[in-house]
Image (cartoon, rainbow, N blue to C red; front, side, top):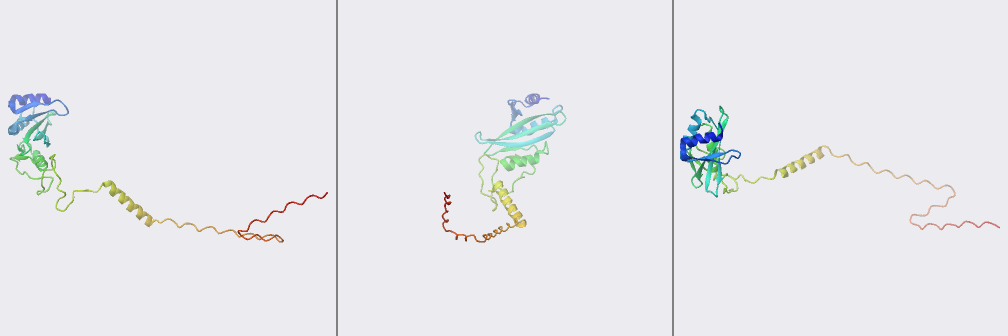
Amino acid sequence: MTTSEIHEKLKAEFGDAVGPLSEPKVDPYAVVRGDRIVEVCRWLKGTPGVELDLCEDLTGVDWPKRDVIEVVYHLYSYRHRHGIVLKVETPRANPSVPTVEGVWKAANWLEREVYDLLGVQFTGHPDLRRVMLPDDWVGHPLRKDYQEAGGFHGIPNLRENPLVELRRLDEVRIAEEARRNPPPPPPPPAAAAPTPAPPAGAPPAPPAGAPPAPSTPPAAPKA
């Protein structure tokens, strides 16, 4: 069954409680009234030929400009290999949607995550509490207007650039290798060769720095 066919059956069963199907992009969806979402989900799971037995995902999206939070349900049938996406819109000031945990047990922790990160209250949930952040965390980090508080119980929320830390570790490693394997000492300078003695009868060598002796012109030939 196609998504359009599932949507047509929903419209025939619930009328105006189910909105039109969106443009067929990646996942076309339909908006459902919040007060009918449990009834719609039970029908989708239990109706022969539809039987969406899996709550594949349940998440939320914050839309400050529209002043709503969307709760998004990705539903799928293993038996029939078809599915649909539903959305419920709830006001940001007091977001509240009935729980579907009684329809799919998998929704339990998924709804807790949406509550934790977006602040949506799921009425009727048997154990609605934070699932990712500590119980005393202030605020909901996936809200678009969420402001960092600068840390939590003395734990800073700033982290060093990992590339800086990797460079520091490289420098430590190179220094340790140099300490364990120092380079060999340089070879000693070569000894200077001794100056050979002048032959017998040769004039002594001029002292260092003395100007060179003038050369004697050759004797003129005899007539």
